[in-house]
Structures are given as C-alpha cells and as structure tokens.
Length: 535
Image 1 (cartoon, rainbow, N blue to C red):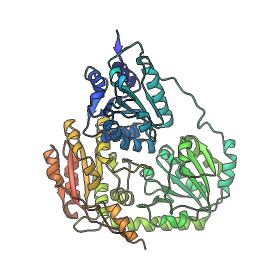
Image 2 (image 1 turned 135 degrees about the vertical axis):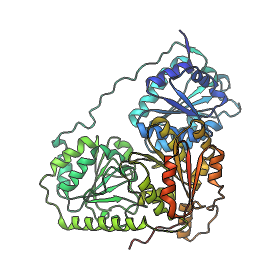
Image 3 (image 1 turned 120 degrees about the horizontal axis):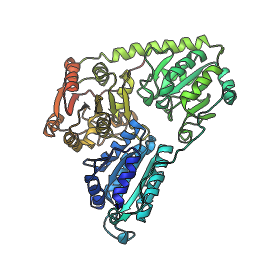
Image 4 (image 1 turned 90 degrees about the vertical axis):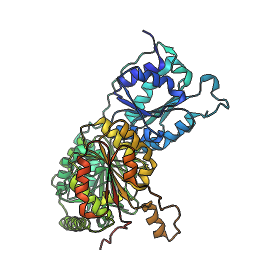
C-alpha cells in the first residue's frame, strides 16, 4: 500500500517512540496535519505560539530522555520556534523540529515568508537539512534522530509544502544499534586521577543532574575522601538534607556561606554538572570532571582531568581508589559548621510573616504542600533564585531552563509533563513576567483537560532585572509590569483560581489548589524582596 511523505514521517517517528508533536497549524504543514488526523499513534498538541511548542518538546525530552518533536509553518512560525529550541540546545535535550517550507518551485525566490531555514536554525540545530526528494525522508529522519539522541541536541528538517503529500517508496525502519565503550573503566585507568585525589587536603564535590544515579556512591566517596558536597540547581533533591558534608546549592540563590570554603578547595570533582557560577568557585584547584557528554560539558568548565563516562560506573571506582585517605578534620569541621549555619538561616527565612508574602515563605509553603513525587517546572527569573535558595527538595523532579534561562518555560513545561506523566502531580512555579509571555496557553491546558497547578509569584515587576539595575545604580525602565487580575484571567480560560494576599492562609490555599481537579492557578501577592543578609 502506497504512502505519502507525511505518513512515512509519522511511521518513522512512531518507531522512534514519539507519542506527540507540539505545534501551531499553518499553511505549509497542512499535509502533515492531514496525515496526523487520519492516525492515532501520534497526537498533535495544538498550542497558541510556536515558542510554547518548542518549550514543551524541550521539557518532554528533558523529562524522558526520548526524542521529542515540535512543528511549525515556514517564515514567522519557524522563527518563533527558535527560543524554545535554544533552551533545548543549551540544556542538551534531544529535540527534532519539523518545519514546513515553500513549495520546491518557490524556494530561493522572493516568495512571501521564504527564508533559508538551514541558516535560520544554524545557531541551535546541530544538524539541519531540507528534504529535496520524497525518497530521502527516512534517511534524513534517521540521521536527525541519531544525532539528537547520541549527542543530546537539537536537529531540524524542513519539508517543502508540496512534498508532504507526494507518494514515496521509503519505509520507516528502526535505528541501528550503537555500541560504545563509554564508562567501561578499570581501576588502573583512573590511577592518575586517584593520585591527585589522594593528595587533596581540602576537597569538594559539585554534583548536577547527571549524578542522580550515583548519589549513594557520591555520599560514600565524600565520607571516604573527606569532601564537602555542593549541588547545581539540576542536582537539587538527589541528596537528603541529612547527608553528611552537604552544603546545598552553589551560586546566586544557593548557600550564601558555601563560597567561603569552595574558593579554598584544592581539588574539585565535578559529576554530571556542566556549569558553575562566576565568582563562587575556586581559583587554584585541580578540577576533575565526569560527564557522559564531556565534549559539551568542557565548553563551560575548564578541567584538568576529564572522564567521559557514566557517573554510576566511575564514582564507585574513585571511592575504592581513595580508601585509606587521611581526611583533614579541620576542613570537615569547617564544612559542618557552614552546613549547620545555613540550615538554621534557611529555616528562619521560611518563617517570615506578613503581606505581601515574602518569596522565601512561598518556597516553604510549597515545600510543605506539594507531593513528595511531584514534578515541578520552574520558570526563569527571581522565582528561580528563591526556589533554589529556600525550597528544600526531597524526591520531587524539577525541570527548568538551565543554561538558556528563558522566561516563559514554566507553563509549557508543566503541560508537556502532564501529557507524558498524567499520574503525577505537576506544579509550575512561575513569576508574573514569565507567565505573561505564555498567558494565551492557559487555553491549551483547558483544551486538553490538563490537571496542573500554576503558582504565580506576583510582585508586579521583572524583579531580577530590577535588582540588578538598582545594584548598579542605573535608572530603571521597563521593569514594572502591568498585570491583569490573574485569577479572573484564569477563570475566563476555564481554570479554577485562588488568590493569596498574606502568609496566614498560604498552605491552606495551596493545598486546596493542589487537590482541585483540572487546571488551577494560585496568584500570590509577593513582596519585592532582596536577598537577606548572610551574616
């Protein structure tokens, strides 16, 4: 039975495990949408803006590790994808963008909305190709999928409008099996690194999301080696608060006392983290970096030793290699003192009373009300820093726009998570500025009946930018927001809305919202707060 290009695209994506495609309907992808309407293997999730489609694909890929897909029409539609694809590219999420293109006869002309999409996508797509023949569709899809999955990156294929409905003899096929020796280390392979670690007197460990499967081994290593542990935002929740030597987060919004010891470290082991904040890090330490995608990681942190492998395979070998190491008790005492100091301060910050509600109090309220296994999607801005600082994560999974740091990530990510894991409690924690960038897609959650909760830090400002401008002594312009009544907007979109004006009923209303079925928004009147003094 003959099939057209659009049908084969869906067959191939289905073989790759793709369950849904996020996008906005447009003229040049009508052929693809027609094929999608006639099958039930892959669902089309229609959103209001193409950046939301790309953000949702990015979030799904971050959550599952599978290939996620977004689509758009040519011209403005394709350009609108770029912000979300920038997030996926920066955070190493395997995303494929499928875009419509002008018909073959119109390519390269002054046809309206035409642009060379391969040039347009170049900054954010490791691989970008235009389909020039109906017989090449499977080859292009396979190459794009392999690159996205093997390199954890963004790829892109543009398809001329007239090719979607053209019949092809190409048929979907499974990806070839790739075997690599990555991570198959022996103890003697790590002899030089082990020698450096044994010489350390003031060692530290920085763990990120890639260390999740090695958390127990890292705890043992820290005890054996006599090292303190710091975590990136992506590493929050992989260790219990009671973990010995755990100093919590690094950087803005992390443990404010931690830089004092981190800067004095003589050896730092980075595991599954690809970034550290300027001004918070040691200047004279030997850096050892473990990451499965070391080529990507080393662009951001210069290391003396790089180990390309899985943390759960390498860390136990390092722990064995430092057995018998003489720990520096003075160093460990300093680490424990800072751990206790920050724990006490963090507890006090979470008890701040009043109206508007202090952001640290909101973080504590969320900590006490969200489910232990909830998925939290965190938007970018002041809200990110306060959650990093004061939300003491347990088993919750947190998704965020890491390196790219784009506002507007929280709501699209929450919708994608709920579609992928409908059994999970899903909470988007957003600032008012970030929410306003994707406000129209409250209707998307309504359309698909998504049981998510959006918690808004409503302080009427782009607070992070305001803080930076004030700190530099410059004049503010454009930082104050003109906000709607978010509860009324949410209710007009079919949501249930709650308003919190003081901390007295914070937990009560958060609990009600989390227990309400269907999309729910909690608008919290939030104080425009700077970080508290650390001394």
